[in-house]
Image 1 (cartoon, rainbow, N blue to C red):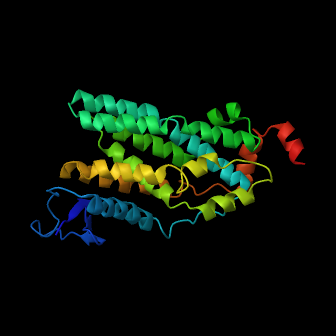
Image 2: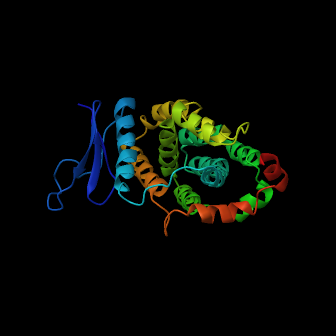
Image 3: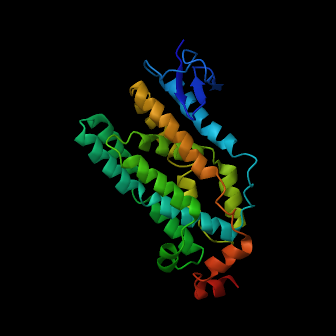
Amino acid sequence: MEVEWARITASTVVVADRDQAWLYELDPFDAAGPFAQPMTGPGSVETTRRLLDAAVGAAQRMVIGDEPKPPLTPVRYAWQLVGHYHTMGPTTPLMDEAAERFLAVGRTDLAEFARQTAHQEKGHDRLAVLDLEDLGYDTKALLPALCPPTAAALVEFFTRCIRVPEPVEAFGFMYAGERTCVCIGRDYVERVQAMLPRGINATRALRVHSALGVEVEHVGDSLEIIARLPARDRTRIARAAYERTLVTFKPPEGGYPREAELEQWMSKFRLLSHHAKEN
């Protein structure tokens, strides 16, 4: 039976076969127990997919019960777009840097994978800019001034994934983000569109980073490559996918900003001509 596993915390291992995935709690007094030793052997697309998806799901469940996300409103959606801009912008330069690091250690296969990822993500931050401009914001002033804490934490974690000799964790970071986006379906996108002022087209970034856009294809392509990697690499990728998901879903320190706070921050950057047009 094909089985893959990866330790995601000091005591928890995510385990997957072709049919299912589960969490296994290690016995600290049994070093010879099942899954106590690092994974060995080859992977497959089916088992690697279940392994990575289970790592992402475990992290999501870890933060369930923490402060729930507030309901989405137009200003909260704009705040999300600011976060998307700050997280998407560094992706291409960081993945290009990863490619150079892989080349330096002779891993040409992963260098090409990193280059491909960098190319695929190029310009996606511009989609968030266009959406914010359609919502009436002065992006040249807004984007340098404000950055949501979760976006800043994601960029900091992503940078740490890259700044090592073999930045394999970068692929776990990317997989977790894209796999989460695949769960965004047409119904959600349409609800967001209906929430926005009539005639405003501000869902470009959301559509591209959803099941309606490129993410399904990207996830499939990534799995084909990751499944062929050595066991040590797949373990590192699974752990990074888990850790990136924790950062994504954990409420900001101090809690989510209140609606009035967001209005106070964002209103400073709303163009008067657009505001007059809305009224």
